[in-house]
Image 1 (cartoon, chains in turn orange, brown):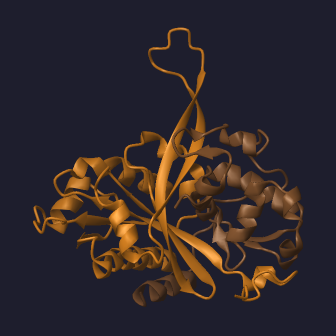
Image 2 (spheres, one colour; image 1 turned 90 degrees about the horizontal axis):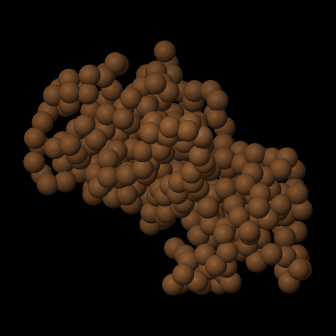
Length: 196
Length: 128
């Protein structure tokens, strides 16, 4: 199979597609991997990264900064949008509080989906704060896995006390069309911001 | 996927890494002279097909094999070879130095995406 001229000397910058990314954030077990799998052209993949951080604990009386290494694992999928663009969807590590330190993950993201379990809204507060502070466009996906809608979009907006109203979309991320609706709501919202 | 696990002498199914992953990258954690993002795309150059593979580190040839037919992001190479992304960045830095790969950095790392780009993404998602 030919490599479609991707690697021609000198012409490679023109022929190679550009990669883009969207983050899928949310608490542990909320369905991030399921959502990625519903739209990805490859089964969700997992990768790990080691992060070294200087930790000065509050109970560290000696105030000696210790270096600790955290392993952060996250999964992702891929969507070839057209001949020039490939989109990677990254699920942020669910249980890991320190993924925010992984600058490379959020840098340059088109936007983020904050996937939320309607019974555990509080799990998404940290992600919402993060994206608001970084001014990364985001949409809230209320994952109604079990068919129960225990809240309305208005109630979620009020509960999260969003600075600027973000799209809130009821979804079932096992369904491709449903996941697409959440992504499209995010992108339309980002487009509104870009138009200014 | 664990492609690298079966082939790699660094990895044992039961005990995991037999050496620390950074031993593979010679103790380096960031590539010299080039910066890679998680979604920097990598593709093997045609010249890599004539490379004397016995002389090369197995991880380097594994990257070339993976990216022979289509460009893959650093993060995807990392997942398929079961290596941390930062190690793959170092290895790709080596391959770039040898002109064995071409890379494409993601755009819009610093600035907000354009309306035109967002519309192309919207159209791509709609077509799924």
